[in-house]
Length: 452
Image (cartoon, rainbow, N blue to C red; front, side):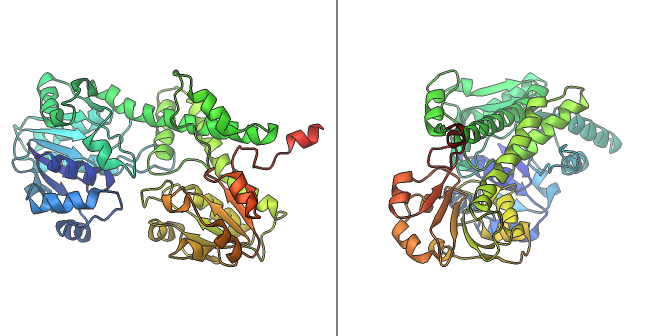
């Protein structure tokens, strides 16, 4: 098939590259000339394991190309994906201005029949809006092309997006007629050849809501476990034991039960907020999801408060080393990262902060802006030199088995705050550190002492 992907951000670039990898002819469109030039050279503007080699390979095989010219990209296309951003608005709703603009451009510039697929994460009813814009625009130019609209939300985990696309657990699509359903089956058959039932073709509104419902459910599990972890700290339970016991129940399962410093990234915060706003729009108050968001913000602050409390409420004259700025390992995405909240709280209480991240420092420094007393280093052990505390925020592989003896020799005072529960109490304590984590007995316990 001939495919046009409009938007060469994270979703659009992975989608276009992976579709080219299985033999489709793909043109990706982006307004950013600098980005297009970089992509034509086979270089990826984002960090995603395995993506850049595929870009280079498929550009070389002439299955994948990049342009700023949408009209040229649409010529002869069978399918056009809309994969532009839908940032969170001030009221929590998804900003559809980019989607609307692209829909109008498709109506103005398409030169033949076309299936337009909304790949961006959008609220329920967005495909109806896109459909209406395209129909009106075609009518205004007296064009007789058959341009239909479908929904096909992405389910890509940052850090594993290429594998997720090429080996999906499921593909969800929403259409209004059998012809479009057949087009989607042809498009995706190679990805589900082992199990065609992985392709779910439903109505458009159900497809749109499946995406939001999935992310909201996962965010809910994370916030619930983080609340349990805070309770574990008070009562002297071990959240890892609680997690394993709960996860052994097949009705619950083991995934997304890890305690940590709170969720972040481009999806969960934005999608939960958008679903809450959609509920309000239709008179359905999403009380659970409102609590999920509140619990997540509390958890981010909880990690920082551990450090502040340990030093008596003021960090003036103290230096804190931060390991990890991205919201998760395997990506350079720092959007809504817990590190932002934690670092800002530490700076506000007078700390000097030295931060390290294998991939996220450039994006983090741009997003958080210039901050007095915040510096970055290129090597993890450089961050701990002269530090009074080391805080693990993101569980990058290179942080999993550090040399605690070397760390201790570099630090001014030996305090570790493990917000990902990566390290063992015994290993850290045997190296002479004060150690706190999340929801485990190695964290400070107050309730048992008070009750004795």
